[in-house]
Amino acid sequence: MNLKKLLRSNDFGYYEKRLCFLLFLSSIPNAFPLLQSLVNNYTPPFRCDVSSIVNKEAAKNAETFSDEQWKEHLLNLTIPYEENETGNFKRSSCTRYNVSLEYLQNLTNHSYEPSEDWFDNQTTVSCSKFHFEGVETSVVTEFGLVCDRAWLRPFFVSVYMLGLTVGVLCGGIVSDRYGRKFTFLLFTALQFIVAFATGFATTPVFYGTLLFFSGWTNLVNYGAAVLLGSEFVASEYRSFAYFVLGAGYGVGITVLGPIMYFARNWRWFMVFTGLVGIPYISYYWLIDESPLWLAAKGKDEELERVLRKVARINKQKQKSKEEIKKLLPSENDKAQSYLKAGRELVLNRTMMGRLLVAGFCWCTVSISYYVIILNANNLTGNRFVNVAISGAMEILALIVFHVIVDSFGRRKSYMTAMTGCAVGIAFSPLAATWNAHLVLVLSMFCRFTTGLGFAIVYVYHVEFFPTPTRQTVMGICSACARIGGIISPYILHAGENGETVAPCLGMAAVILLSVASNVFLPETRDQPLPQNVEDALKMKGLLPTIRCSGGKEKSDRQSVSSSINLSRAEAKL
Image (cartoon, rainbow, N blue to C red; front, side, top):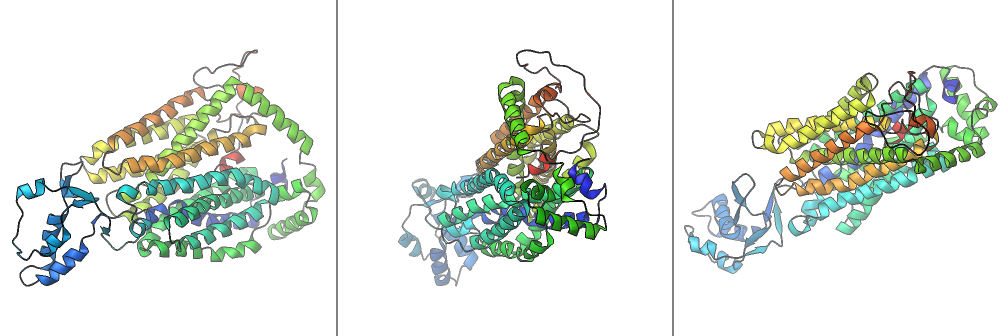
């Protein structure tokens, strides 16, 4: 009987239900920093700003030309037309004719139309000032991050992802050393403080610095919440604790659409997402430290207080701290276990091959996930509705995951979901030539499949590694996912110039390669979690794997129920 069963006595009492609800609420704002680029990087249609000419001449010649007619006339004389990817012509966004502004201002004949030779002989220059259409203000419109400065848009997203990577590296260390509750409260507070401060960024450098800290703080509190939930509830409810956190995150994406609609100014959006954190101050009193961590650190008085509170709320008999401590392994045993398993893992070619495949899949899923979710602004229809639908796809993916992963199997589920994603992405450029709404449908389908794929790898790709190294493997896979996150904005930026065929086909090919690589991995459904490398080698894939020297791999498999592994949930870091 493990510690969590001892604490809960196979019961999911009021305390656990309240804890799961609190963690659900805490995960909703985690979606805001991750998707802030949908607001901050929003780029409305733009062109060179010639408003000084237009306004002056419109007022001067209003007797015979309306303002709009004169504005259109001057724009034709100032900004060249360019052919877009669909064969249509539109005004250039980044250049204007290199003509004397004084010449244009001296035009008094409203019917003046320059000859074709006049246009052919004009050279163009880059715009120094831009006019953005619409009412939204963003970092792009305020700092002019277009044309020769457009590279800053994907760069800022990558800076945020780099911050997430640092959070992956330090979050677990802080949580293990200072406690789950401390880490959760600290990084939750920092997340809201950084969001609030970002609304007052005055320069691109200052904004980029705050973005890094936004990424660094964003998911550390989520990981601590995962540990709190999974270490408080019994193992049979652990997957539900993870589900409510994922559902909260999906709800956060869904409500982001209406928030974006009402907060059209990026500074007000950041200030609002910072002020949202005020109610979470109450979590200092509502959330308790994990009994597992307290027992491991020898904090007997606080452990007894938490156990007494849980027993009182659930109306159960309190368990003694002596009973709990007997269930914890000694530090010596743990160190020897980690050292031995880690050495065997590194030296075994089969296990290293599996690790490479898992890391590649995590990187691929991450690239697909972020490219699709951050592309909501570029889809047809209302962009606010698109974001809300994207959040609904996240929740639907979690529901489908819990339905199919145990009945259909981990490997088949992943391969099916990501194959569907690859087909949808590859088909998108062709669909764009038929109907823009079909592209939207395909994007939401791919959004669903990538969300499903992410949920599957959380479970699957750690279940065929030995217990002592499972957390280390999860950290490596999470780092690979962060690398994918850093790459994704550049793939998204590459398609902004209208050339979407190459990026889409390239992404689809990489996804299919990750799908094919999974044939070398074993199916873990209904198999016991391996406790050592020897147990792990007994699990085989569809195709033979490279064997380590010496010994024949056995093919017998035991058919027993396995619980959802804790490391799946911790992977949200």
